[in-house]
Length: 311
Image (cartoon, rainbow, N blue to C red; front, side, top):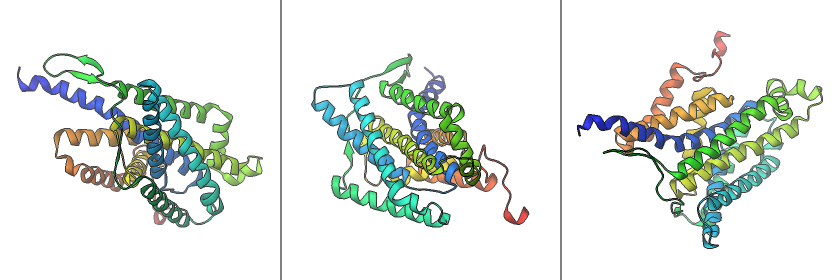
């Protein structure tokens, strides 16, 4: 069979491979967008919340496997453990670190989030060691979509990851649009002072927004554990930066922009890995992100940007 006849199947497989990565970036980017949209602050700790969710997922999965369970049950227990861990961590971080300084200048909040990330990384390193933790694949082969000389397959783990991420994002988007909590979020994001004068408990809105963002981060951490297997105490730094940049290039502060940016970044990284040296993947990804922000500072779906001197 001519090599060129295999190219469509090859790129179809790469597109399927990009789906799990897109779910990872989209959920974490949505966490950044959800909180930045209401606080107008950049909080860099969610990559480490995802890391804690990953470790919780790995340990819960191993415990469930040793108990004689397998497959879907293991993934479900791992997801619950990741969400519970990240939600507790996010709630505690909000109460102890961010709530007292939320009215401070944005630089103070960002520096506090960096300090918190360092603390979380070191605690995880001391508790779990510097070596990566690994989880064996929970499922065997997947479903063959295309046969022939180059079969195209989607794994059962990919299906579970896509289903979980899509469900979470659908619930988030529908809740933000139609629920009372979503209306309170939009009111607080548009004008916190006016919302407070209208009787909105803005402190409570900030708190549950932080918890919701932490839950989204936990799903991304769970995806790392079950789809890729290896988790590291230091992975939150790069993972968090990538997701934040995905949210920025999509249009920071909007959930739709975070989704678009996460899909774009996953497609970019997958296409590069499939056709170029993998060692330069992050260099290429961040380089293209910088170029996009130079040409379109407001992001792909953001509002038109004007410099202060032009206002």
